[in-house]
Image (cartoon, rainbow, N blue to C red):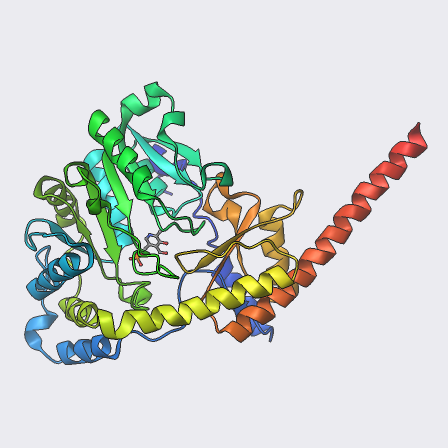
Amino acid sequence: MPRLSARFANFPAYPLAHIPARKKALLAAGVDVIDLGAGDADLAPPPAAVAALQRAATEPAMQRYGFGLGYVPYREAIAAWMKTRFGMSVDPMSEIVPLLGSKEGLAHVAFAFLGPGDVGIIPDPAYQAYIGGTLLSDATPYVYALRPRTNFLIDLDEIPTDVLARTRVLYLNYPNNPTAAIAPKDYLARVVQTCHDRDILLVYDNAYSEMGFDGYVPPSIFEIDGARDVAIEFHSLSKTYNMTGWRCGWSVAKPELSSALAKVKAFTDTGQYMGIQAAGVAAIESWSAFVPQNLATFAARRDAAVTAFRAHGFTADTPQATMYLWMPLPEGIASREFADRVREEAGVIVLPGSGFGEGGEGFFRISFIQSPARIEEAARRAGAVLQVMQQEMHATSGDIAVAGAAGT
Ligand SMILES: Cc1ncc(COP(=O)(O)O)c(C=O)c1O
């Protein structure tokens, strides 16, 4: 067996990788599984995107390599949308990098900006591409626990100065997966200032920019003064247009930063299928016809989820953004055990907080990827399991108290 590299031999297992296989086994056993796991909605993409892909599939010119340049109208549609949505002027050719989904860009950008001895600051819990890219670049992750104490924000003032001095990349994601937290603009302004002062690349993951509720409109990092100098922002069609499987996203940054990511990608992929980029144009151009009503569907699911999980014994804040509820578990109930038992005993897939990093312990996440009725049923089943676990816990602690009493 050829030997694994030292870097890879110590690579952590990808969390939650066991869940799809367990789901399949439960379904095969006839269980009525309700999957509220991955952020992967059951809803349809914009019809215009589907039609554009169908058309593209019949055009010989669209079947060729896209290379890094890709389908130029895709770049132009992104630039036009960035202008309408965030008021930002972007040069389509030098400031946008088309991506095969934003995940690969989030991981690959680290290759250009991190190396041995460098630090990447990673929120925890977080989307795993950040730590993956950092470790694959042989850099050192500095993991910061996102907890209610700081409203799930990274407080850079709490990071030791010797760590900040070695930090080359800071990953931030608001609206946040998995905590559903949002970042106030004054907080973002302080972060941008620190990145300026210390020459840190701010990797701003904005995958949920179009998933704000109740009038909350998530900003671009580029709405913050000075961000153009230090930030690269990542966008995705996945959540906004129910196009997770299509693998289509982009980054935006000034040319010096964009070209570095584009260069890494030139050595690792040959571009997205241009037919998908053509569909991306149609999706982006259907924003006003599609996004508000799609968001209304998610808002109804969110409301159903908050009401139902509260009714069944959970604590749930109403999130202003994302497609997730991040709920605390009672003291003493480990998130992995809870998620395993809810899945195996009640056929409901929820994700344990610890699956997003140790900082997520004590919480679990559900996604609004099913109808309100199914979410309500899932909450009922999960609540029943929670009740049993609490009874078991109290019985055990009662036993210990009795045993203690007998021993005195
Ligand atoms: C925070 C965050 N960033 C990025 C992504 C990746 O999206 P894409 O499908 O564009 O790779 C996800 C997907 O779940 C996510 O939650």
